Image (cartoon, rainbow, N blue to C red):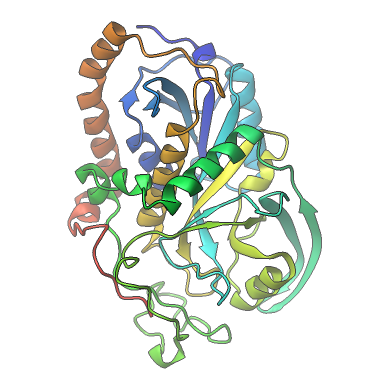
Length: 364
């Protein structure tokens, strides 16, 4: 079965390589590549199966090296929209720096969805005029467009499912390939806002003073090791947030749950931002939680697509005969390609310490 560019209705954008790898891993079926003349973006094509037995044809774009920030995202998304004329909406999926508070218990590995309960936009844009460690001037704040109704309705459906105990995204974290690529780290350290990272040459916190850890209540046994979903505002800017004090100031002003760098570039598009928390937007930022946070965000994005019906996004129902043929020829190749690309990108050592997503973790 040959697919055309016009057959793809759902866009999925990620910035980092690990985010793109885990996005591809969420596909139920991977399609052959299709030429995209006059478009320099590199796409991956595939399907995600829906609860009503139809499918979403999904095109995934990973921005890649040197293409972070709102300008790069906007340019890539514009090319994507021109190339795929049937796109109805786009998901912006990846990692972010969270801001913990007593009101919003955002922790490493959790998921933040840019959907505000007050009907406001789920993403705001911020910029810095000048930043010298903890002295700063915030010069702009702009509220962006709200996510489209089809995505907000899907979010409501997901919230109802989760409220009844049906946490579908956990099922998408369980496959062995996902667990190998993105094992859940053990340690979740949140330091006092006034305490800065000790050794700039060593991104780990081995030399940091554990007496500076902020006390937080331990999550219940049933919640430990499970990504918690938070709904609210995401801040998007062109600088990586590495100041806990500035992050807290913006959180207090605008009710921010996390910080990232790409969603502001999608203001002219129909999109929803979904972010996995990989750090606390402070000087202790490192890569330890990147893979797991990216996997958690991708799993939520996949669950979201499974509840969007074919009447909301026009897609052709699965033709049984054609679908069986596609599935047989591509499913094994898809899983193999995902693992091969991940191994080539990160090496075998990345997958040596396999841990269970549902296990108990230390959180201090």
